[in-house]
Image (cartoon, rainbow, N blue to C red; front, side):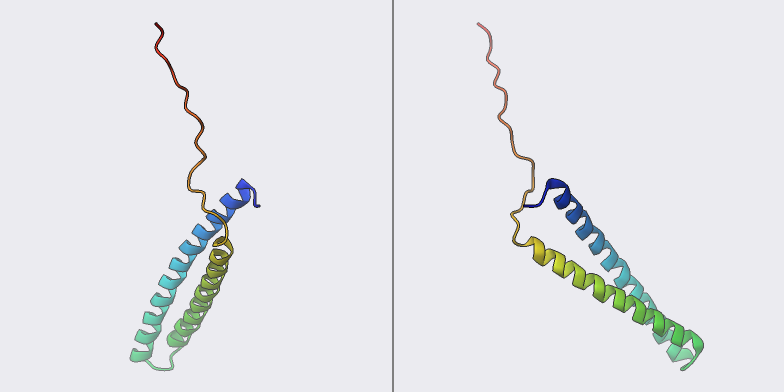
Length: 97
C-alpha cells in the first residue's frame, strides 16, 4: 500500500500531466495553422519547414504525455479512492444541570 505522500505526489503528477497535455495540444494546433498558412502563401519556404518541424515536435510531446497519463491512470484504477480524511468521533457536550 502506498503512503499518503506517495499518493499526494501521484495526484499532483497526474494534474501536471493534464496541464502539459493541454499546453502541447495548443502548441500543436498553433504550429499546424502556421505551417498551413506558410505553405499556402509560399510552398517549400523555410518558414513552412520550420513550422512543420515544430508541429512534429509538439505532436510527439503531446503523444508521449497522453501515453504517460493513460499509464498513470491505469495504475491508479485499482486503488480505492480516498476523497476525504476519515471522520473522527465528534465531542458530545452535555448541558450541565
